[in-house]
Length: 328
Image (tube, rainbow, N blue to C red; front, side):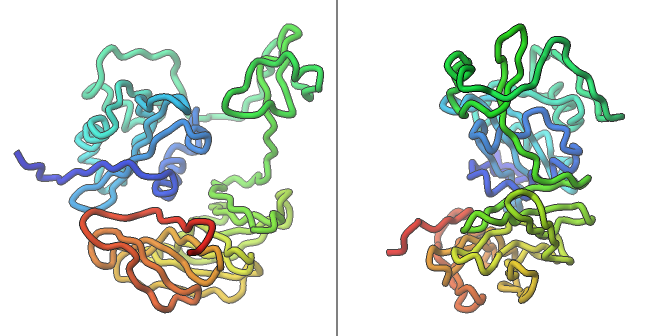
């Protein structure tokens, strides 16, 4: 029996879902309990397609070195949500997930639990933020971690011991070392370090739509580099003199800008979507993905946008290309 929806679910690298995940985080108002799971290697990522079009993504979680069997996130673009249930079933089949863990403020996934799951359990109910709270857990002390503490702190298997700790009953029960670099009311995401480590390019919606911003390594001297379109995937050139990025202005295309905001230029110009640029180690070429010929394939071009040509061909799709550290 043929599938009239032509649903395809494909496991992909994390980079391939980041732009869709930004949409999910926006819809959830960033109120996601395990938002850091992806960057910490706790998830496998899947692209969802219908009739050849990317319509969403799914994330399936588990221990870093163990099987990934828990569906944590499902995002479907609004125009395709009528097919959310068969897309979820496709994700279950492709990932072989055994459990679904849904936040109660994620209405789409929560409602579909009643169609796809048995033995439902609710250990907590997560409500949307209504006000700012400041509750202090009784008996918990936040303090720096000392060298003496490190000898007795519980084993850290996936992350180093942090510089700060939470002490309860004379014992350090949690550690961390986060430094907040941005404090805007909008979403700040996709940080990308400059080659010399002194600056960070990132995507922010503090001014409305997603734009490319730049800041110093300590979070100071923030300046905006782009003004139009929906801009993501900022990538520094090896010399640090150019930032390539993906801009959605109708179609997705690869653009570039200098770190001082000058020399903004468009490197690709459709047809189809052209996105996810990756610099060659010598800074002379860019690798990107495009569906200008039908299915997504990898293409190369010179840094000025000229000499665009396919790097992959054949059946199936090729996405999320990345250069090796050394050219042949």
